[in-house]
Image (cartoon, rainbow, N blue to C red; front, top):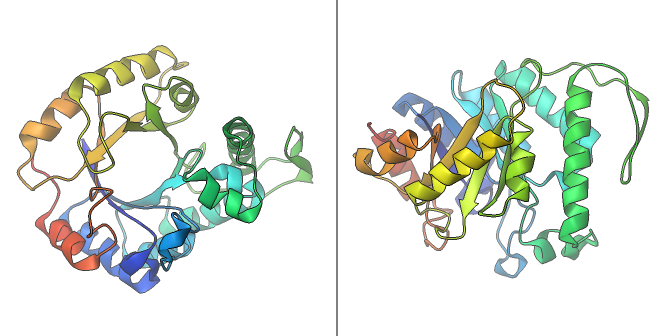
Length: 282
């Protein structure tokens, strides 16, 4: 089991210098990764201040040497795949191969897509996600890419340099369990970041649901290779009785998250206090 810290890209964490200090504190305290959200407006009526996640992670990379860095999650459907491929590859080179990209449909759809005239049909968004992921993988190969798909056209393009990590930067896919389709999508990549209808962001999921999810994803995997299962919630330093059973059920990462409805969700002081206590001891 490895341990990560999860912060939004708004509020106190919309500032790159603040995120750099969080990353350094997390590394010093023994955490294994820092993940930031990838939102443009989130709930637009709240009028929050945001930072671009890849700029925030660049600052984090320059402040650290060991911990993994990534997004949870980047909605590939509202990104141009070639630009995203370039951003991720640049950060992977800068960090010496420490990037993980979490992906998914993204939400809330009306705020994050509809506000900008983007498609809001979940079926279309899923098509864009799958086609975009395929293009990311091909761009990162360093080989010439030509593609004529439903949503994207590419003509004889080679994007260099490639990421440090081979064959690609790890791709984790998010989705709500017990919905099956996102889990089958995740099975084609390098990890799954399930949210649970029975447990809000910041609440540890039921062990039996994690076990059922792991069994389902495993049954749809082609071949072997590393595969991560990321669960999370709000914990204390002494949380072995909560996290240990999740590890036994097949989880490989515990992602430390503030509850979604917490007033401290985007506040530096309480989150830094938890970071400095160090990851849960199993």
